[in-house]
Image (cartoon, rainbow, N blue to C red; front, side):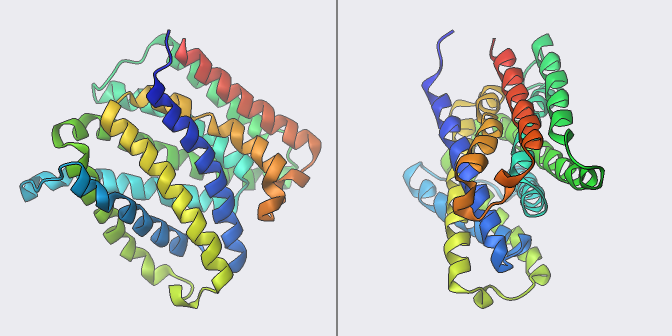
Length: 295
């Protein structure tokens, strides 16, 4: 089976995601918080997509049609909030592999919405993914497992929200065109984000300059990551294949946290060796599930 070249885009996005997650977590040292992080990232996303309206034939449609971008914008926002909560309160070497469950959830939503079928391999992959999540818990001290469990729950909620959004994008974008769909969708994401303002711990202008360097870089990396994924879905479809390949970020997260996490003042590389071994095994099992689905 030949490997479609457009699937190299989610491979690159997987790298951008992990580095962006490390950068966002580093910004947390300055007390940026989830809500200010989400607000900045969402408006960065809109700025990335503004040119798409002018370069890819964006057209106005009847106002009644915009419920579709509004729904996917809400799902995108939910997925983002849950993942930022998971990153800020847990370990990236747990959060990112758990996001691999999005592969199975996309297959399930595709079947329910009649966007695709779920072959037997997917259900076997689901079992492997569940085993991988169990490995991510293994090796922790009893008092820490609850902390890891909350991280897994938040990451799974994010995967479900993003996954349903991906399937709906594959279903709806072809009739709109990418230039007409994505700019209003991410404008709505930005507008929804104003609901976070009352939750800010302090105004954005109160952030110190070093915090802006980290949050700006993290928001840009996350924006490039999200742009790559949604554009791949909008242009080529293949939500299941895209998410299969994108799930390599689970393995990348463990490797990069161990290799370069100290550049971001990340302390996960100092976890007990047995914990890192279990997490690496869990991430590798996620990749095995991905490979199984590719067969």
